[in-house]
Length: 251
Image (cartoon, rainbow, N blue to C red):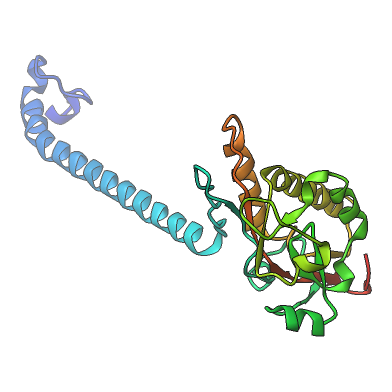
């Protein structure tokens, strides 16, 4: 003779006479079970949201502290005001050494921050770079090609009426050139930058390794398109350095 419990089905349904008692008991236990499942789902949702927020915060911190940010490109003034080539300050390699790049493992040679100091260090004024540069990095081949374009002439006045001789350019605090020369300057330095990287040169100037100058030229050329601008370019005489890899003393 089977017991009453044994005669009841494994799953009791409310329309099963034999299982009505069990169904009632089961129905009484369902609400707490559902509440427990609901609470468990809520906890999982909160946990997932917290993990997502913490992970996002960690990525923000990583990007902020460890990924280098490019210097903002300089904007060119409108109207007839002279646009500037950013070479007035000393172009150093201090910031470059923090990240692995073309300068990694190279020694930095400085020209100082004045004409007198540059001369004392044996530096020469480079009309393409618009800066004093150490002898190791004076690339006459690129200077000659740059000067093949008749626009490279410098002037002491903003109206471009008083030309300067090449020897006098480095003695000035600043001078002026045409906007055509500004274009030629950027184009030539991009070409020089490419061949330096392509040939794996072990000696190169700090201007082509400077991200700010590249950003400046990119911004200047893109803004120039279709503008019909004719204003002169203000050039501030700069002091560039030279990167020399071990075992190399000349280009």
